[in-house]
Image (cartoon, rainbow, N blue to C red; front, side, top):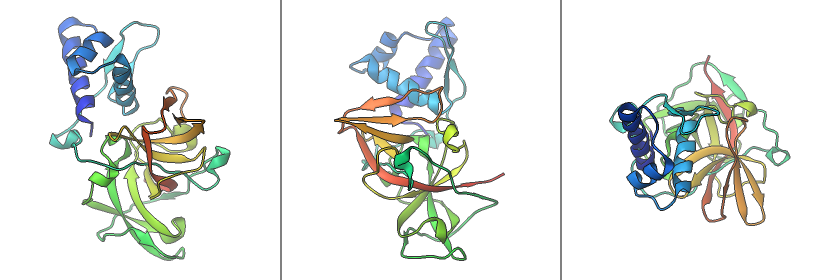
Length: 248
């Protein structure tokens, strides 16, 4: 699932490469999408690359490769309004995250979120809201069609939900493409926490949160991707990473 602008840019790049054999310039992309600056194009390309739709070829000017296209009519995010997204884990302020990995087949059929207390024997049904790299704000997804069953001891108290990871930008933190991450809803997180962050009320992403003065950095755990720097009003927190599930 992509935002409208991400979808438009991906199709524009594909069509121009099919026609000319080379990717369009940033100026051409900016004009095609009616954006004010090339920085917006850079941000869109990074998001598409992170999600696995584009690949930038090294040491070549204007070298882009369209890896895949969105699937189905639901591949583009809607325009529903949203609140911010973010998250982390206990001990994340030290910059270290060791995921709690539960393997096996998981499914569920009951709505669930708020938890007061649970033992390892208890099972909690959490709503599965979709893919974290989809670009759709979490609050816009009110009616999840799937749920996951989670040992209650992984969650503790509070309101939780689940998301499916798309991409490899956090692979060095032990978070792989296809993992199901468990998120505790919150509006702030410690410096160094791994969070679900909403950028410009449009793009949801899983990154490590870094703050310095008035700036906010969203840091990947993969050296192939760039750390992105934003002003304080552009990033909003919607939850904190507390664990993940992995199916083999």
